[in-house]
Amino acid sequence: MDRLQDGKTAQSRSSAETGSPPRRSKRRLKIASQSEFREKSRVFLYELSEYFCKVLPAYSQHVQNDLAKLLIIHALGASNIQRLMATTQRVPYESVDVRIPGELQVPSNALSIADSTGLPRETVRRKLKELMAAGMVMEDSRGGYRLKPGSVQTEELQAAFYASFKAMMTVMEACLDANLVEVE
Image (cartoon, rainbow, N blue to C red; front, side):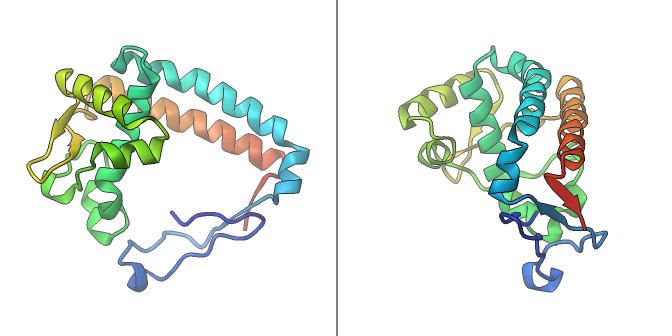
């Protein structure tokens, strides 16, 4: 997804330029400028707080209520498939029900995870070892780490993903109602 810029419309590059799948619609989101956001920022912060209170418990139970582990898992999962998701090759893997083969994933090292999460590298290393012992993360033969195959395909996580999606739509609806986001 293209990054939205302050007060500007998101511009997408052509599929041919990026190798990404073509978008299904011409809709674009325009986000409020920073000053417009500040005027109604409490609306967003309230909805964001509600979102976290609804979503975090469902995920944190899988990591013994350790939010650092949760952050590491999300950062690791995103970095493992970042290249794939930016190409047309992603189409068969758009459902989390379909496992992504290891060769299509890019392993991440502790330093890159620490950089992306802001956690100290030693904390990341320690938590990765704990996540490996719990069967959620594995070392890749190419070096680095990736999520263990099948770790995101559980019924509990599938339910959590959908609950997260619904809660995120509540946040988006509030942002639309407050004119913090506009669909063009």
